[in-house]
Image (cartoon, rainbow, N blue to C red; front, side, top):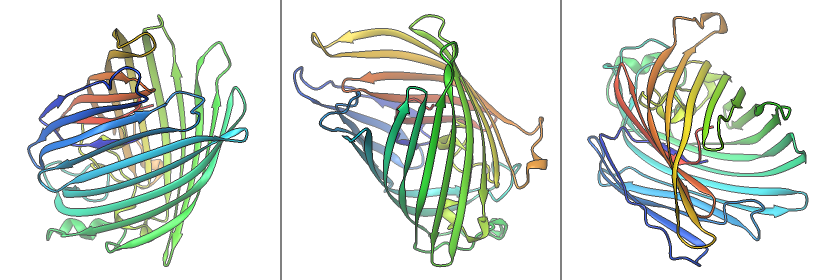
Amino acid sequence: MMRTSMGILIVILLLTAAAPGFCWRVFPLVSYSSTNGFLFGGVASHNMMPPFRPFAFSTMAYMYTGGSLYAGPELLFPAGPGMVRIRAEYSVNKSKKFYGWGNGGDGDVYAEYESENQELSCSYNYTPSFSLMLTGGGRLLHSTAYGRQDSPLWSSSPSEAYGSIWTAGPYVHLRAAFPSFLEGYTSLDLDHQFGGDHSYSKAELALACFTPITPYSIPALRLGISRHFSSASTPFQLLPSLGGSEGLRGYSDGRFRGDWSVLANLEFRQRIFSLRLDEEVSMDFGIVAFGDAGQTADDLSELRWDGFHLDAGLGARVGIPGGATLRADFALSPEGLGIQIGLGQLF
């Protein structure tokens, strides 16, 4: 799934379906950010419904007039009893904010910097049974933080690796579905990266459940906890964080930082109507009411029941012909309005 946090005040989605009979679907996106200017981009998808034969493709790409840009293509194709997934991401971010290391920093105190990131991953997905999915692969990462604004906040960072840094390593994803009487899954992600003087790891455990009231009305809940290891040898751009693009939708990206992270997402998904484009192709339109709660800490014992940061909001979902879903979420928190746009459901 590709996703991006934009801090947008006004968003306009222009959705234009490809002509009936064509396999490729292209949808333009236009928006505005008070910090980055106008955004121009689009979403393209092809055959994003199983069994993905002969291949499936999806991407989101955009650029801001202020200089930030993003591109994230993904290719899937069957191989033997499983599926190969190849994914690349490239982003340039202007005026990023660093709020310091810790769970309770002042939201009005931050240092700005710029960044460039690249990621290339390849994985193999195998489903030995209806209830179990196994994924293994490798990931190559490159990150650069530059143009740092003078601020004492930098002294709080556990990492001093701000330059151009490459790391690579394996990752494993395990997902087990619940028994048939309860829809949902548990998942475990293990990721290790190393390169030069850098070696760090992450483990994440999550539980999600869905309890449909009708085929078109679905409450959904996700609970997750993650642990980052060796922050001191982690490139600054890859330090763990919690914010808008990590699922705490009412806050800025990277708003809260710590080795431990806890996150809960509650959604009520309601499909509103479908627009039929031809005999085989239609677009589904829906809305989502949601609430998020999360916190970070340096040690597990520091997580507190009264330490959660909260937000709530409404979102729109558009089922794009070809199998992809376009997501737009508008969340309010004590720190203002956060807007998230991406491909696929949040969970």
